[in-house]
Image 1 (tube, helix red, strand yellow):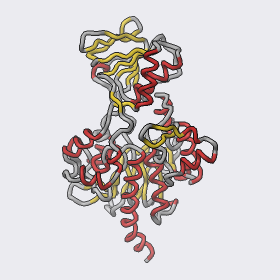
Image 2 (cartoon, one colour; image 1 turned 60 degrees about the horizontal axis):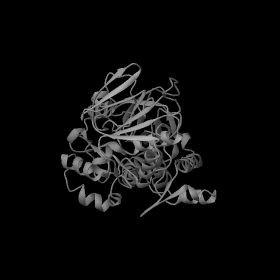
Image 3 (tube, rainbow, N blue to C red; image 1 turned 30 degrees about the vertical axis):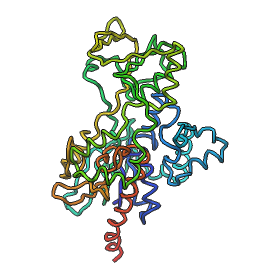
Length: 417
């Protein structure tokens, strides 16, 4: 029996595990991270490699360690301060290499691999005894290995930190065209092609197109729905402040359409940081990259190439078309739906989990708080537009750690009697 199981070993799960050990009386043997990948942060590493990320959009104090200036001290102590990239009118941002090296340092220093069980959680249910605990049904690791002591785990509480759950957005026009790949779902940037077409413009699309063009190995075209828009960060930094979140987001009812739309309007989706936009424009000016604006109407394969017909009547063709169309909605993930149905948890507009704003506990349909807590993209309705980012992990951990400590106190007292 565990006191808490974290489902997901990404940035949120990695950060939260440290906060629970530091800010509560939770012992290591009572905490577990369940994730199907071989190591923590593996999904993030793969996505970053696929789009050839060079540096992060987040500022240097946003990382997986619990000390805000830990990454800066790490860089300075290893003569890598030059990897904290300056940004006009914004704090410095780390290179991907520095961010991941520091993450590895934090993970090893805290022996977080010792908390990691490599497995996928297939379902969460209540035991027949209905003693307030949860049962997590497990599957084997992603490579088919069975690194499990038991196919199920019992726990007093659980935190869902699954992000978007490995689901990516495929537009309707791409259905049935097998040679169209998603940048995070089967694309290998090291594979050569006669030419590459990157579809839909946002930071991932621009990052990928620019890096491929700068290699000067093959012609690259970026097809964006509209002219690229510039923004340094994903949302106004005021949304980092919890008081601002309470004033602007929590004034609307939990689970409401107003909350979903407030978050959507606050996010700078499909925007590109200024320095990356400059790199893109330089590559275009030098003739290494072409940019085309327009919506795609349909796609089909013709003689080993994919031809895209645009809404304006234009046409684009490439041997290797790559989608950078983002994630599928987290709220309608089949696993999330099954957990909500099995545990009778309340869902709001478009399936958004209805959470207690102070604890991030997922509310039961009857009105009480369940032993399931939420961090990451699923918590956007409470944490706001930065919910899925590193800073969102910090805001969520502040509340989940306090809630779990209060929740544990009565059960610990009972066990000691």
